[in-house]
Length: 379
Image 1 (cartoon, rainbow, N blue to C red):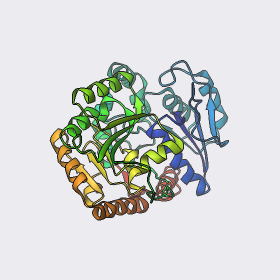
Image 2 (tube, rainbow, N blue to C red):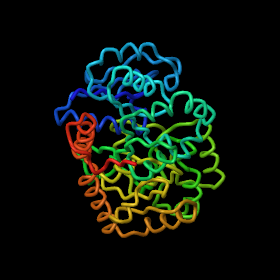
Image 3 (cartoon, rainbow, N blue to C red):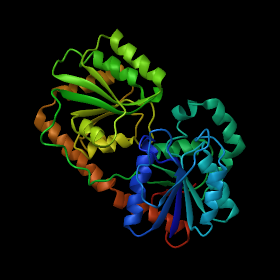
């Protein structure tokens, strides 16, 4: 099959959708599929997540998320012999242009919203989305051959918008070749950490408030916030940490490559207190490194409880305080068992070869070359 994926950014700092797509493409190509990616070139000091010739970058418009790009439209014209076009993300010109291109050339197209129809996600730049939805986004989604959700919860939010298309529930792909937790770590203290983009949807103020009542008076522990994002939000977090008199906290800023890997490996626990996550790639990245996770029920990670790989907890400060206290009091041998359970979960259910094989089944079904997969939901 000849497949084209499109996405607004494939830069190192682009975030979760880029990491998801990177692993999926690797899995598809390993299984012999002819897959390319069309995206905007990164700006400023950012760079493409990889430089292989199947990643095609075009000059970014002034506003690379919503902005019109004649360059992108022209580049699409090179792919009229496609079997499948697969757009990643919503509210972006790359997805709209891909949908229009697919319809004009009778090429079936899929859309992976990557959580962008979740209620909390809709609230961000809501005025623009209220314009975009009736103008073009609803039509693009309605006419998609399939909408791809990463979990049942995301499918339910998609259905709530009234979309009756087939929905395929396929999780994000993980590279299970990631090294296990290092034997010799560099951290001088035990660490609880957050990794990701600083944004209000991540609920980091709740983490700071919970840490103030659970971990701030434990000199052997440290709260590490790895990442960057909205400067106003980050400033408010620093101010809150000062107000709560938290001394054992560290903001590392954005990390990538070896720096990020070392920071991840040094964590004893990862915390993701988000209001909403369609998958939460950082959870799987922690689990594959044998790091137990504390995640809110705004994430689809009930398996943390069922597989004894961490804690899947209710929203709010009190549940997070209890989980943090439990984590810090967990004996080392049990923490190691939880870590092994987490890695086993990812190896068995989320490895990129298995996920890619599911996506191939989906593509073949769309092309009438296979039976409907069990993970496809029809109304």
